[in-house]
Length: 461
Image (cartoon, rainbow, N blue to C red; front, side, top):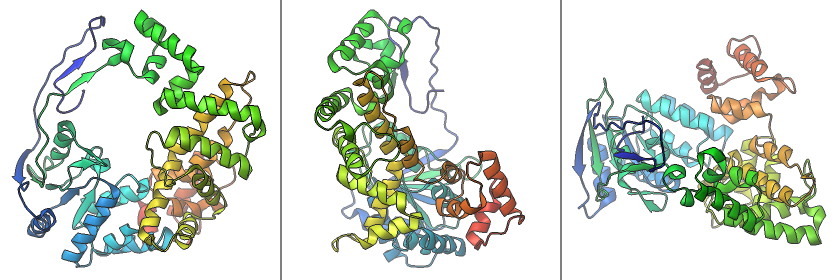
């Protein structure tokens, strides 16, 4: 299945496989569109619609985490009634274990949920649970929910028309629209539009390695077996490696950062190797000078050019944040540190959001950039002796045992998992960790749990 709203798939003339494309517009629920695009006051019109439909499960789509928090604050002003006991209990727990300054804490106390890419996975999962059990008055989200999670929402408010800073296209709009209604629960969904919808266009899925090998993205071009590429693609691949000096393995694995960016990074590394080689030739945990050098490289040549958001404005700041996380005993203490050292002009809630943006960067972007830099460096070394994998993995796990992050992905929030560290033997396998969690859940192991933690672990399997 290719997905909804696909009108065709293009493999190119050279493809010899058998394939039949069947297009259907079948929908499990009907959708009514309520057009509010001509309103002169979008916010007040939305708030009026929200109050009129409070009895229904509803989701408000916004462009970014910041706009989601801003809209939630407007909803609270218009509807200051407290949320359900379950929502308030979760708000109290989040305030105690992450930060009382977190915008999500205030929102939940008033029955408003938030869902976006900066939320820790276990917290996002719990927010969805509250929404599905009608413990939230409304869920304000970004595309991370609209494009990836099924809910029982009867109403979708398309408040913004952007995903981050770009207007969404018809394919994304149709996906957002399709989230209204749920078979066997709401057979007719409603979608409120506060902007003109994008023009309807046909969406064709293109397989560039078959249809246009000369212009296929470099990571795809290098990942495909030579037997499956026409001569034109092979010639282009040889030309790229010859002109950039990058290995095929580097481009295949890290080409998503941009081959030109990797090539410029290579040139900078060459200069450092000629003048300060010890700044790059290390393993394990780097000292401050080596750490600052590496993060400056990955920020200037990989993160900043791709406009990747990692909660830092420079390589040096990113280096400082990473090392501060390393020495922080808990995520709460790290967030508290950020708030205490922030500028007076920065709101505490904004600083906490930056902290969560940094956490999300540590999840993938930062460690991947570290390994990309290592790969480019080793392309320049005959013995390929540099190994930064220990440090990259430590960042990915926030300098905690790897199972702490794994539990967060399975519904046990990071701060709760941190409390389990004294109970889990060093070097324990995941099965041993799960056994400890089960013993805590069943009362075999003694651990003081508050009601929220009891509910979280009761649902753990």
